Length: 111
Length: 112
Image (cartoon, rainbow over all chains, first blue to last red; front, top):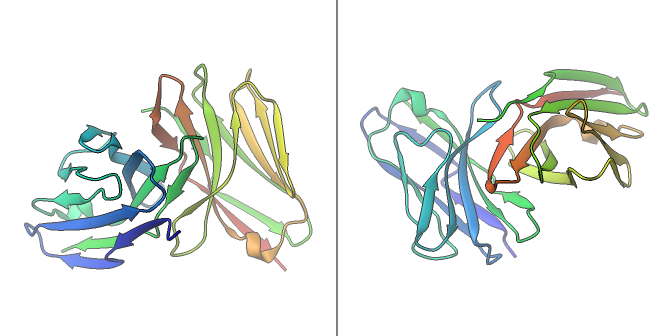
């Protein structure tokens, strides 16, 4: 099992550009989520999904969109990047035993 | 969101025990977690405890839960330099296990 994979590892955007952060898991987990990690603030939940076709907002959803067309994939879209979205983004999936597994992260800088 | 609080730094000598503390907002049927993050890496689940338990031990790790004081601790016995990392406490609520709330992390520095 590869676990939770994320691409890209690093990305630099200009303000107003759009991009999609990719996330995939091969553990057949129904629940997946996206977090952002900022210095001194721990992880904050952006969006989550409890299964294909079902998504919901977390603590900080503004500026981000998600979709879940398959169990394996859960992409995060930034439609118009802003400097405030400079952060490290983590994707995670959760087992039926409530254990959450994290990907390696994507470091995003918005200029 | 819920408040999960941790001290920012802890420094210990190799071979000593480390105790990392966390306070949380209580709720029924809550899971409490400890994660480890090494530089440039994602979060690794170390252990978790259900809120109806007082203690859980797993090799060098001991988790203690004081429900009355809403206090969770992680004790690492015989701390090694490889234990140097950031440790996050997290909580998921009984009314919605889909939402996890993380503390800001405790940076553990182990001196040789």
